[in-house]
Image 1 (tube, rainbow, N blue to C red):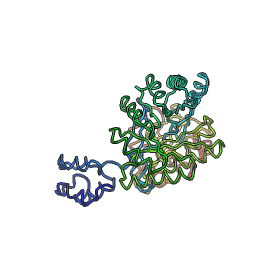
Image 2 (image 1 turned 180 degrees about the vertical axis):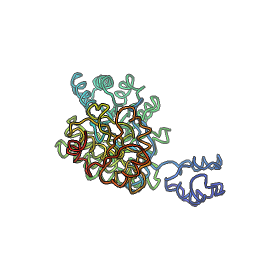
Image 3 (image 1 turned 60 degrees about the horizontal axis):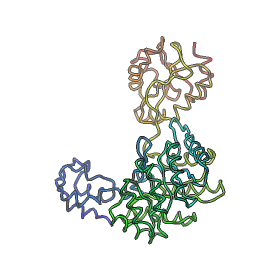
Image 4 (image 1 turned 90 degrees about the vertical axis):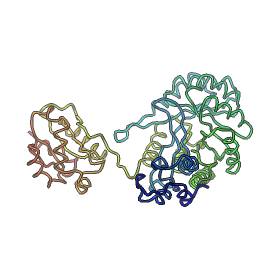
Length: 444
């Protein structure tokens, strides 16, 4: 269990300087105990207190890194049980299973198919995150060969799945520098697996026979000095997986340190529809890595969409960059549409401009990602903000006219905008679906 707020308060400087962002040192201590503040924000804390309070100030679920380069994966750092309490920090890594019983060309083809599982969702690119090579053959040489082929073709980090320490060591010769996740360390092989994980500085998957066994095994491994861990209770039945994942997250938030690490779930149901349903449960509750045995886009896309919905910050709307967007290669006489940078608003407007078959420019004003009417009500979509966008975006260098179209729902802005900007302000339709008929009738 972690320290209480009062125990933390006793070790703080008690200056009430407010430099940490809290009104008092006691308030800061309470935030620290709840995992909602960082000790680094206190400028006056002593070195001794930093050492004593380090565990209390760390997130309940430790941060674990897998892979190298721009596609490296970060897991953990979670601080809440429910997303609406704050947010979930790191999206779970959807991982494609590749068995070493496949021929080399089949391994290469499956990895290539996984690389292509990338989808455009409201302007953001989403895909899978990792390749899990499984030692299904039981042969160390086949496993090492399959790992080498997968590593050569994959754009993603690897997870290596074998209980054979010798097979794991043979595979790591070629891919150890890429810092794969090695799995699993069990009661039978933990000394050898920990030695390999420390040698190659990799994350280590720990598999118990149940929660009690897992907790004891984690304490044993952390006692050996390795703390980059990913946990597996050993359950494969969905009901038990759900119960174990929930219990591990609950206990981690209560500062039970053996469960203070990200977790992994394996989808084993042979029915493809049920497998997607099982994976959905694991994504929601609370697997940091979900291993699935499919490269069918129809199976993967629903999981990516669900993950996007769950791991989107509920306090931060999805927004597009506030800049000029060109639709259908517009020229100097093309219309200029002004809207907000809420992604759904932008994509609706862009789609309806394409439907009109009349090229145009879109200027999404930065409203912190909120919609037109909400932005207007919040004082963020104003004549002054639109004027600034018209002046600073560079649109005056792209068009020969000075006409802009604003949404019909905020027609009230047109008078003042026309006055302060020097642009002729046209009031467009209330809904973007009316753009095609509006342009035909009003734009010359």
